[in-house]
Structures are given as structure tokens and as C-alpha cells.
Image (cartoon, rainbow, N blue to C red; front, side, top):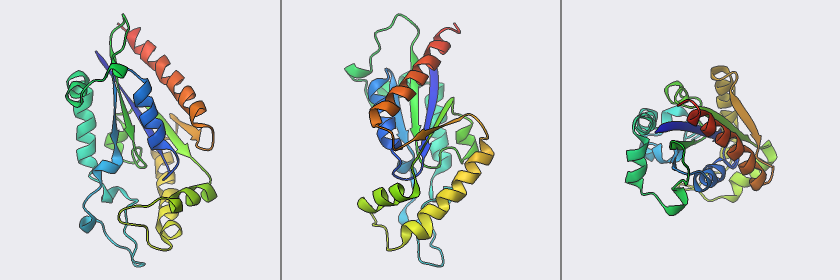
Length: 204
């Protein structure tokens, strides 16, 4: 039994959740932990001088709790996976040792050092400003984005967080073009992860 932790990071609406869930559906013995499920209560998120809620910051997230969840999974992935319920699609038909894969998905997963250090593979989805804004403005959030929120908070914080990520992880992050067809991205990342799985099996 061996664990493999894969990080799928990226900007808002870049396609990271879609890729993470497709990987989960494709890779045997896998599950997903999404950063969005670790947001603090709305009342705990500070507001800036423009009245914008500061959601795109680590302080808006329960990062210690998320890191503990990933750490717990890494120590005993088989039990954690069983507790979530294995489906037929996730039962590997292989004679080799099982490699359990955890896909960690979120927009700031590489900016929190304790969590980042748990990653074995890192991928970062990116799209141009215009496409990012178009996708963001076409979605309905709860609570909804106020007027000017994308340009006043979301995009500026993405640029700040991106610089911080690059300083923390100067190499080892594979950049993915979120404008490419979903199947092409899935195939490339799946192939890369499969090679890593075979390496782990070969270390017996």
C-alpha cells in the first residue's frame, strides 16, 4: 500500500475542479479533497475598504484543517478510501501493489507551505484574463459576486497569490493551458500520474 498525493491548483474557473474529478473517475483507488469545502463562515471573512469580502486569501480558509485531512489520508489511505465508499470503477485489476491516489484540488493549495510539502505531483491550470473573467461572470455564486468584484479583488489577488506560489515552489509545478480540450489535458496528466504510480510499484 502506497500513497500518492496529486495537487491540481490554478486560478478561478480555470478548469481545475473538472480535471480533478475526471482524474478521480479514471484512476483506481483515488479520491478528491477540494479546498472550497474548507472556506470559513461568511461572517469570519474580512471585508476590505471597497466592501469586498476577502475570499481569495489563505486567511479565508481553514488551512490547518485541510492539511490535517490530507496528512490523515496519507497515513492510512486504504481506510480513508473505504470510509468514503469504493465503487466498481475504482477497484484496480492489477497484480501489483495498490497505489492510493489523493487528488487535492484548489486555488491556493500550493501557497500554504505545510500542505504544499505533502504533494508528490503538482499541476497548475491557467487561462488568460479575458477568458477567466468571462467564465467567472457567467457563474452564479452564493453569496453572489458584487459588481466589480473580479477586477477589484479576484484578479489582483490571483496575481499576488501566483507570485507567492512561484516563490515557494520555484520548480516542480507543471503549468497546464486551461484553453486546451478537456480530454487532451486529462490524457496528459493521467499519463504522467500513471508513470509515477508505476515508479512507486517498482520501489518494492
